[in-house]
Length: 270
Ligand SMILES: NC(=O)c1ccc[n+]([C@@H]2O[C@H](COP(=O)([O-])OP(=O)(O)OC[C@H]3O[C@@H](n4cnc5c(N)ncnc54)[C@H](OP(=O)(O)O)[C@@H]3O)[C@@H](O)[C@H]2O)c1
Image (cartoon, rainbow, N blue to C red; front, side):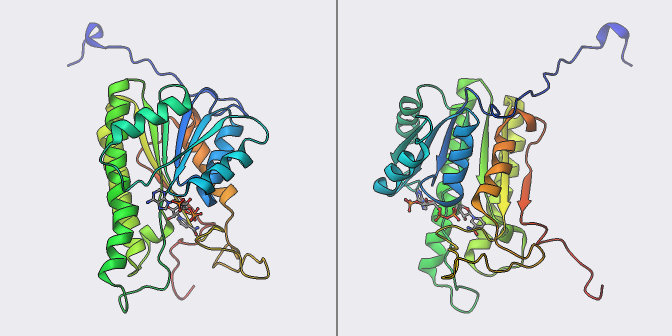
């Protein structure tokens, strides 16, 4: 039985953040930040007061993106790095700290590839390996290192993953399966890290305009079921910023579908 003297108070700091300063003072790394969804997350994070580092394999593309993002304010730096090169993560984290000017608070695992046109009919072992190597294996090993880094620093922090609606849909392209497995990892990490004040969440976009899914030649956002159009990377970035900010402090282990309701299960004969 609990007596009055054995009851311990619990103190809670409710997350506060002002519009325009949702990530003020935070240092954020966005993998694959040179284009598409990652670039828009980087843009939005910088706009909300963060120092941002974008990474990717193509150094020239990164430099160009950083220059564009820095047009308003110098807060975005870049680092050419293939996430499959995760053997020296302490070295990568050190470089990231140097470029950001201090300890990392948030890590966005956005880098990923999509091999279009594959199903159970024609998937080769090479395609399977490439997709799983980048979207799952490298992403998980990189995140293991980031999680250990954040634990060691002792200041909490946040990992965010760009999954996909295909991770919760029927899909025999290895892409969807890599994202389904990633969803399990996101939740597992959240469970393991919550005691350290570190959060792990995901955003699962529907079909979004990017290099993976360019607009058609007429520039149209061709129709998607339910929402009736493709999504914009800027829209996905809004949810990402919310999940990185202290406004979502009580959200952990969630994967938020950003697809305009495309996966709502419906009764067939409705
Ligand atoms: N567009 C969609 O419809 C959609 C829908 C659901 C989920 N997603 C997910 O959203 C994320 C971003 O994709 P996106 O649509 O914005 O396409 P994107 O513009 O092609 O962005 C992908 C980025 O990842 C980088 N990347 C790929 N492999 C890498 C590696 N091994 N190491 C480092 N960087 C790597 C690419 O840069 P480099 O080539 O310079 O390395 C590129 O900047 C992906 O995880 C994708 O699966 C996209």
